[in-house]
Structure formats: structure tokens, C-alpha cells
Length: 333
Ligand SMILES: [Zn+2]
Image 1 (spheres, rainbow, N blue to C red):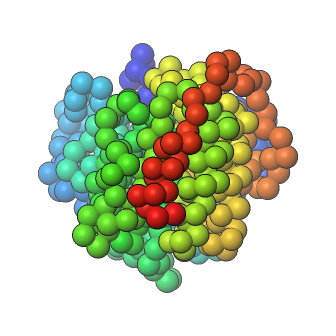
Image 2 (image 1 turned 45 degrees about the vertical axis):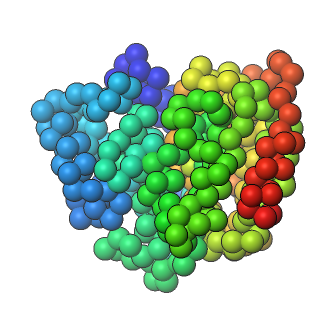
């Protein structure tokens, strides 16, 4: 929908930029298909799937105050979920070591039973479900432990809820707080067998490159080393950049690239390099263009320096020491 921050221009601008920079020709393109209804049911309730399909068939409508469905949304969302699965299949099948599903609409605010926050189907949840052998098409060897690192500026309330009781998925989120959707408290640590494998790191507005780097070095790395995931999935949201209009964090393009290098190193240490990224938010088109370009460079091990024409955060960074201390204490990291 034109005029809405989450619109088709995001991917059009991104594809054109990557093409102009000769990035696409250096990558392997992975074919993908829309997920079937049966596979969509591996994550979502049938009533939610039918609702999106019927709304699309009727020409579209609003799912909530900020989330729209057009005539093409059911197919687009089923394709986005399918692309996330195809990326994971290619990585687990050894076709490529690392993959990035450049998809929309985003997914991490999609719950089993409803969509919100621009999200219809939960793309990263499908990537995890495939890796864990929960779709009809299964990997040669289903995994037991998957870690999802969600550095979109918003808390992935849908992903958290889907895996809240599930010890097979460590969900870790860095997000601005307070901000939509208002969830993601440190004390929300998972339930039952999933207790301890839900790690929320809510950050005040204005945390920038230094703060994020400290959070990754002292919390994210420690959590990953303890959990020993067999695959790392990333919910990559470029709205944590300081210029994004929907949030107020202080990361630069250089800082985002650093985070991706840390994650790539973790995947080398723990997962034989296997890493799958799924695009979430990011509504400043230049941030999205350069951010994804730099991310590909980091995945290829070629990001000695980030392309950062937008520059550093112009304000003073907010410190994160006390949040890091609280998260480490609560999770015994
Ligand atoms: Zn977001």
C-alpha cells in the first residue's frame, strides 16, 4: 500500500541498489515457492490463514489499525514464508553456507492466531519450523536446537509467543523500550520446558554502536555459547538505525555491520557457519539499501569496512550497563 511505511518500494529499491552495486551477480539466487496451507498450519491456526486468504480474495482490508491486506497479500505472505524456508533448506542442504531471505511483509509480529504490526505470517518461525523438521518437507537431518537473534528495533512479540514454551528455540531480542508493541520485558523468560530460552534485552532510546556492541559481546555471545544452537536464524530489522522514522535508536550502518560480523563469527564457532537471515523492518530506504549491502559483505567475510554515507549517530549514546547487568543476572550468564 503506497503511503504506508511497509510497502513494495522497500524491496524494489533494495533489489535495484544491489543490482547496481553488482552484488546480485556475486550471490546464489535460491528459487522458492509459496507455502501450502498445510505447511502454513505448522505455525498458524487455520482460522488466521483462512482470514488472510479471504480478505485478499475480497480485494483487501485492514487487519488492525496499522496492518493492511491487499488482493496480493495472501500470496505475498505465503511466498515470504516459503522464501524463508527455501533459504533454510539451501543452508541445511549445503547449497550455500549462509542465506538471506529478502522478503516482505515482515513476520515477527505475527502470532499463531493473528497478524499485527505490518506482519501476516511469521517468516522466521517458518524457517525454524523447517529446520526442526515440522513441515511436510523435512531436512535430511532435523535439528534439535535453533537460535533466533532478533535485532529489529521492535520486540518480536509473535515469534516470542510461538516458541514461548519450546526448548528447541532460543529466542533472543534486542529492542527499543518503550515502543510498539510494548512487550519484551527482561522478566519474560519463557514457560515450562521453554523457561530460560527466551531472552529479552529491552533498550532505552538512544543506544548506539557502543551499547549494542557491548550487549552482543556480553549477553548475546554468552547466551549462544551456552545454548549451542545448530543453526542461527536472524530477524534482521534495519529500523534500529538512528535515522529510521519509526523508532529512536542510535545505531549507524557501521554498527549494524559490526553486529552482523559478531553473529557470523558465532555461526562459524557453533554451527559450522550455517546462518539464515530473514528481513523484518527498516523503513528508511537508504538505510535499508546500504544496510543489506553491508550485511551481504559481512556474510561473505568481506566487510573490512562498512559503506556508511549516512554517518554516526549525531547525539550522545544512552548507556546500557545496568540493563546488561540485569539480563546477565536473571539468565545467569
Ligand atoms: Zn521493526
